[in-house]
Amino acid sequence: MRMNFLGSSGLQVSALSFGTMTFGGTDPYFGKIGVQQLAEATDIAQAAIDAGVNLFDTADFYSSGQSEETLGQALGSRRSEVLIATKLRYPMASGPNDAGLSRHHVIQGCEASLRRLGTEHIDILYLHNIDPATPLEETMRALDDLVRAGKVRYLGLSNFPAWMVTKAAGISAAKGWERFACHQVHYSLACRDIESDLVPSALDAGVGHTIWSPLSGGLLSGKFRRGEQNPENTRRSRGFGDTVPVNDDVILDIVDVATEIANDRGCSVAQVSLNWVVSRPTVSSVIVGARTKEQLMDNLGAVNWELTTEEIRRLDAVSEPKLPYPQWHNRIHSEDRRRGHDGRVLVGIESPGRRAQRLAAQA
Image (cartoon, rainbow, N blue to C red):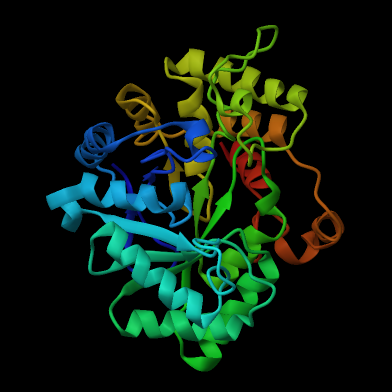
């Protein structure tokens, strides 16, 4: 398994990590994507470790803590071989302080996760979403205390806007507090929104991206095909939220190109879609889930090979998003300061699409 550094930190994480949202999924909501009790969860977790995965992702909110409990038991004696990432922010009880990112809830939530996971420390603790009611400084001071107490080793954000990533980096530098090493975001061929602001802010702050839903809820797995009936027993058919809000025709266009590449390579459409995400410049690890061991092994086959420049160009072209203002204006009017007379990028941030075009021209 290929390893990447987590952002600009010294921690190495597997290019593919395993998401445990389906573990212990008796919850009516999370049960829509799968239900894996301890025996099945243990089997698939051990298979992931044997394949080289060293990062497991969960959250206190997943099935009201059942995911954390099941993961901790499934890892068992192999806990020391892997890294555990979990998240806090959402309500875990009905009290007024049982949600959010206040100092009270951050510390309380961390300690509760430690108990459920059955571990002495959390390797990566994420803020699962923003809390507009709590000053960022209050949250970050509490996180710094947790790191200094040895309860947490690295810090992460999830689903934050770019301006808050940049602000957090400034606060860390000014106060001497622990910095955020990573940002967990949604990124796929069907949803490239992070490229307009979050990618530049991550590059500037040295923050690595860990990716959730790289197949956009299964839409890019190859199950959805043009001219065919949508399959049953999927997240979409069960009404699970957080599926990418894009036009089906766009998805089908992307799948058509990914299918052509997969057929040429003799691999699955899911592997092509995942490999594209793995290749992005800010990506440290891509989170994959699996309801079966066979599905897990197919997903893990997406690493240790690379798409060609021409394949990347084709995928970039069919999935190219429309840039919001002022990004489209900046792209047009900043070329004079980003490139030399020979077309070589001198400074600044190069979009993946432009990078593929440049490499193709040089080939």
